[in-house]
Image (cartoon, rainbow, N blue to C red; front, side):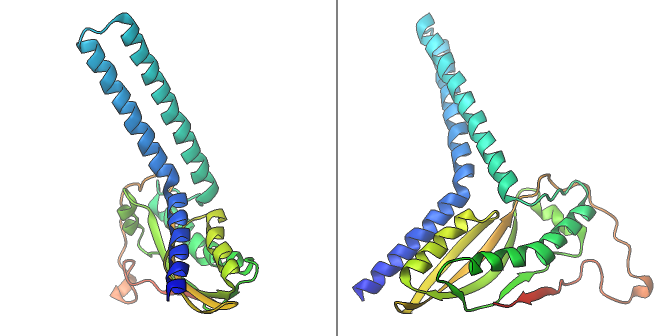
Length: 237
């Protein structure tokens, strides 16, 4: 039982690494901004207290360094976003919805499937099913302040302990931002089965534009634009 706990701890550690990797740039920018604000407040405090010219000059230098750090981390963040995000703009929510359909119906499924298949010593034991995006462009307004989260669901893979650990770490290399969560491990090495949930986060390049008028279906029949979305075809293993 102690060995099983140790295995679980190792897996949880890997998942934490994935989470840190996914959120690193957001956290670093926030840290840099807070450091800049602290330097600004300290500079103002020194000036208001009638500090010496040397002290004031030192505070100005600290503020310049803090501003430079914010710019540096912002550039790192933008570079990562360009590398890991599809080009989805929501300026026009109608074209944004089409771009999202392309991502979820043609790109994301094969991308995830190929990534798992490329993991050495790993066999995919489950299917990959990507939920369809909304068919109402006005639903994209909900992404004004939050990313588009696509919950792929539970993934099951088999392999030995080392292969599974390498596979979990490999999600950091995917050119999408993913969350690996709720891992579990069963069996005895080299025939282990690892199950985890997988989610993908998409950050649109621009916030949603104005809402659009949705014409009702002719004659009032058929599915409305705001009706339920079908599921995408299942990607077999």
